[in-house]
Each structure stands twice: as C-alpha cells, then as structure tokens.
Amino acid sequence: HRGWHITGIAYDGQRWNASSSTTLLKSKMPSFITELLEEHVVHKRLGLQELAVLAASVEDLVHSETLDLLSMAYEAHNLSTHEALETEWQEDLVMMTFVTFYLMPWTQKARNDSSALDRALERAYRDIDWKLAMLWSDDLKGAIKYESQAEHNPFSKTSAHFGTYPLMSRLVEQFIDGYGMF
Image (tube, rainbow, N blue to C red; front, side, top):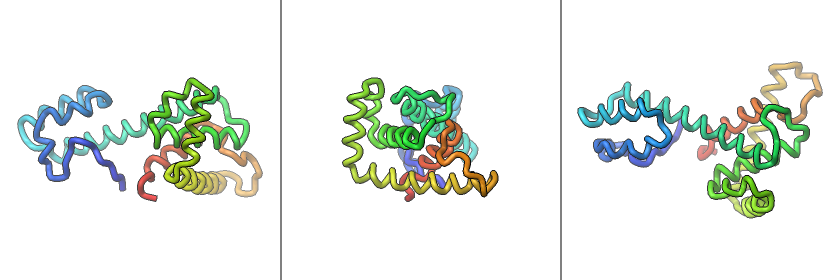
C-alpha cells in the first residue's frame, strides 16, 4: 500500500525505455542495481523481477533517508541518538524539526545554526500543511504508545514519552509510510 511517484518512470513505460532515465537514481541507488536496470532497459522492457528489485531498493532508500533526517533533527538540537530523550518536550522538538526538514528540505541547511533553525521552525509553524502533518504525527504517537503499552504491562505508568531513538525511528517510519495518505 505504498504510493510513490518516481520522476522518470511513467506508468505506461514511455519514459523508462531510455537508459538516461536511470541517471536520476544513480546518486542514491547502489551501482549494481542501476547497472542491472540499465542493462535490462537497453535490451528489453522492465520485467516483474526488475521492478521488484527497484521497489525494494527504493523502499530501502526511503527508509535510509528517513533515518538520516531523524538523526539530523537530533543533531540540530545537540541531542544524542544513543541516549534517551529526557522530556516529552525534547521528543516534540525532535519531531517538529524532523517534519520541518521533511516538508521543507531547504531548512536542513539551518541545522547547524540555532537562530536560523528557530526562524525555520517559526516559519513552519505558520504553514497549514506543517500543522496538519504535526497533528497527524501526534495521532501516530498516541497509536504507537497505545500499542507499546499493550505489548508491556498495560497497568504500568512507565515512560509517558517515547524517549528512545528506536521508538522515535518507528514513529518517523510510520509517518513517512503514511504521509500523503492521511
């Protein structure tokens, strides 16, 4: 149930028949995958097996870039991915920064300048799409917390916030998987 749009790959195959179509993927995809695709495109149309390899590679690429953005959000606030976040405010700050970096990629340049980052977050806060994405992110957090509570002792009052990098990773992966569908 993924909904990806990849520039250069048309649903009817028209633009995929030129080997130059794989150039856009070369910067991010492993070279053996792009070589395999170029070889098949030159000799014949893209088959089901090649398409499956491409889909798996793109999914892995999206996953990697998601975790890179999350790490950037942690670094922007001088937080370690190896230590638990101490407060729910830190969790919210990391998520707000992640969503800002995702929806407004040009703001990633501000990650090493705290005043520029503050201005980027203030601008994002005025954006309706950002607000909707954050609202949806809060819903996802609630759902994940509920699921996590069911996996552990449902009567325990431990960890009211995500705290750990693996749980934040789970949140941003679900955010990316569903973004555009909400």
